[in-house]
Each structure stands twice: as structure tokens, then as C-alpha cells.
Length: 295
Image (cartoon, rainbow, N blue to C red; front, side):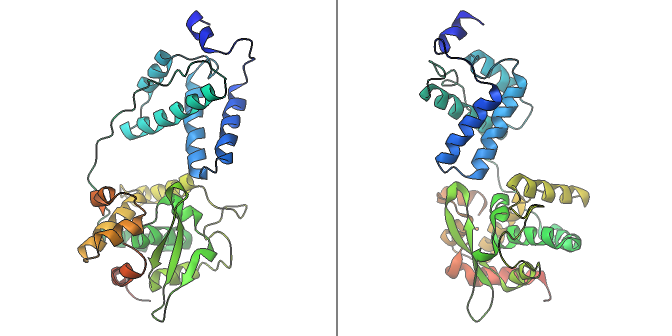
């Protein structure tokens, strides 16, 4: 241990194991009512750092953390996300008195370039929906992303009780448990609702795991990505959400309805890849779903 590192540790404090340290930090996030998605992402980032280190998480310097950043072979967006999680962890460690100086305070978060939307094409969407019918659960995941604009985490969080019956024209309004624990309401067209109801779920998660609980968001992402790779298409589930936004804009839906449906706080975010909501956008969303074909 270098003298610089020694100064960073609180005197005479025994070092907890990395595993115990990470779990203590995650329990703090749960007490703060952080979303499960945030907790999972934080755990993944810290374990990635832990696996790269050959010492305690508390025995690092800024130089070590920068070397870890440089070693990452992932996208700039992912590096930025990992960096933000690691900085939050060390800020907490300093607050807890686990280190006397936050070694991550001056870590650089790389600037992520804005990318234009690349939604799935209508032809590829038709092919994907046809190919996914062998797996009704997967099929419904794709429908919720393409025709209701849900993220993978929002698909995973869907419960039967979240679907509120619509008016005489059928369909429903879905309470979506969105990013940052912010709920919103989106329109579920009649034909999409019929496919969801055909799953036969009476209560609880629409997409349960083997134990009857909710699937994890990353599992929904993996299932969709594996499916697309299997049929020779280079898309992710999120590209269906992009399609939802762009197609609604093409149909003339108000951009603020689109913003509401996507759950974006900033209209600027929506304009990057466009989407619509609830009652004001219901007619446009129902019209959009007509591309599903027969009942």
C-alpha cells in the first residue's frame, strides 16, 4: 500500500470485503427507494471494477480508476454510465467515513455524442411480429414496445392490474412504471390488448419469471436481442420504441403527446427520436395499430 493510498483510508478502520462493501452500498440505495434497475446497474458497474482490481475497492487512487476506464472495451455511452455509478459509490464511501478522500471526484465522464434515431423499419417490424408468434410472451413484448412505446424495464414491470379498460371502442390505458420511478399512462390499442389478454394472466406480472416474479429488465433486453439476431435483424427492443415515436409523428400526433407517452421530461429529448399519450393521442395510437392486420 502506498503512502498516498494510506492517507485516503480512515485510520485504524478494518477493511470490509469488496462483496460486503457493495452489498452495504446497495442496501443504502434500497433505503433511498432507488429503482431496481438503478440498483442492478450500480451493482454491475461495481462488480466490473472489482473484477478488474487486485485489491480492495477502498485502496484505489484516481490514477487506478482512470486506468480502469481506459481498459473498458465498451461503447462511450457505457463508459459514461459506469463512470457515473463509480463516482456515486465513492462519494457515498467518503460520506460514510470509509475513505477520507473521494478518489473518483475528478474522474472524467466522457461526452456521449447524440445519435439520430434508427427505428426498425415497417417491413422488418412486420417480419419480426410474424416470426415471434411462436412465443406469445415475446410477441407481446414486441407489441408493447412498437405500439405503446415501452422501454425494456417498463415491459418487465407490467402487471395485469396496470391495464385499465378503455371506453366503448375497446382497448385500455396502461399505467407504466417508468424511468426514475415516475408513472405515466399510455394508450393500449384494442388489438394489442387482445394479444395481452390471450396470455391468460389473471393477476400479477404480465411477464413472470420462473418463480412468478417480474423478469429483470436486462432479461427482457436479452430475449429480444437474441430473437432479432436469430432472424437476421440487427435491432434491439429499444428500436421498436423509436419506431413508435417516429410513426406517431408521421401520423400527425402532437409532439407533446408523444413526449408524454415516452415519459420524457425534456421535449428536446423527444425531438431526437419522437412518441404520444393517453386520451389526446388515443386515436392516433389506435390508427397506428391497424398495421397489425386482422383480429
